Image 1 (cartoon, helix red, strand yellow):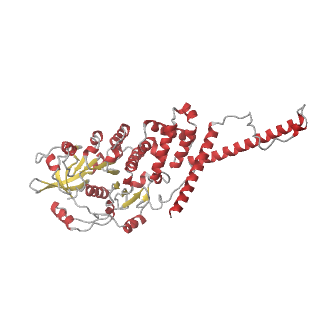
Image 2 (cartoon, one colour):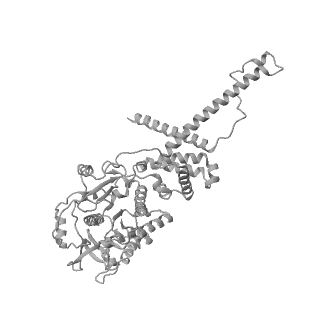
Image 3 (cartoon, rainbow, N blue to C red):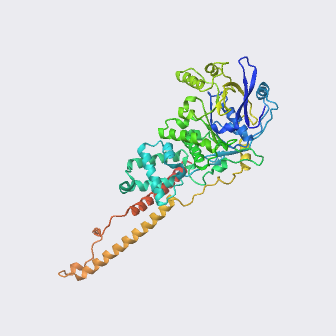
Length: 520
């Protein structure tokens, strides 16, 4: 049943329910990407699980998101349940061995896995704009902010770094517009409000250091199996835009960091993007083009990308055309859109004369799918109605104790679990602001002292005045401003701006603390 260089998916069946032949995914075409679709409850998660198991056993690292919380069982030994044993017997899987797989758990919030972070600089203005649903004008301001940070040597690591820089830009919009292009104060204010919303939604946990190293999701074990990185996404899905942006950032990092290797015998990494429709919902054209470019070119770097979604219409045609390996579970066809989805799915397969593809899609049972993979010289195989093989690992989630046991022996334990806040834009601007404030205060005191000395000398030397001239001025009289006032420089304005930002954030923290104590 198992063959060298191939990943066993299941066994096809004929129209009379007799067993036909095993269906495989050739590892050398594993980086040609894929699509797993089907309605809720039809078996997409199990298909993802058995593909991840197969790639791991072949020595290929895997990264996938656990959206519903039940994929974590891949880290535990499977259990001989009746319906699993029945399926194994039905497809002729002998022997049906159970196995646990090397898993690394990740979590943006650090609750169900090791912390995952990146810096604001690594995220970049395009993805950050997507995360904030920014307008074109706001995206332009973000591009200018990154340009200023680069030229001034100000590292943008976390949200407070970006907040401090935006505050400076708002205070000095007129001067900066002459050098970098128009900066709208209203756009700056809108971005700051969006950053506050992101902070309240937990995005502050995502930005900072230590940032995730790509090599840590491409690990293999001593016995040659690929590690399966599982991202806990059940809580993350409460903010779907953050979820989609994070996975797109990770995909972009792989594209930028990995070298070209052509067509390897097996992938260097396989990336499963569950709930893929969230990536494309209301996405601007430039972002869709970016995804298409990454998917098209990352193949030559040995990375396979598999989109998992309910409806094939969720994926744009330009991206869909790049997905050579297809597993189509059952679809419903009650509404016009669903009927169109069935037709679209059927038309993407190489026809099989033994059955009508569109009719079969609506009649597939749970754990059954239409399968077509690349074969020969990279051409798609004829579509087959296939019974998906049962998983070797546990079908269902790990307990909290089991998850913690896996994390305690993780190869990345201690690398990402603690925050590290080194000096960056916020601290650097705060220091400069404090220094500028001291210099301004010293200059003001010197100016005041000079004015007093000048006033004292004139009291005794002005001719034509009597004793009244020697009287000290009343405290109630306002002191005149010196005519030697000079307009503050852009840097002085920046320093004062950052000082105000620091004071505001400290004040905000104090207010939160006070309000928190009142709630108790």
